Length: 98
View: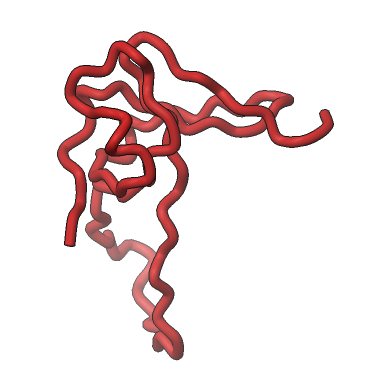
């Protein structure tokens, strides 16, 4: 298992990385009843680290950019070579910009 291995995606897949999260300092703790349902955001922000050569909706220029994806559409391939986050390009909602 030496150094980190890379994955070159195929079949219109994108290789993603977790986007750095902004952590709030001194966030207060709120205690809630056990049966309280918290509405969670189904979306996540990820960074594109590699794309398949046959992608048509994203380009090489988008590598390194942040994209909006539904978390349940992102597959994690946990292999001896490492964990790889993959999503098909048609599950990208958009590229975040300033």
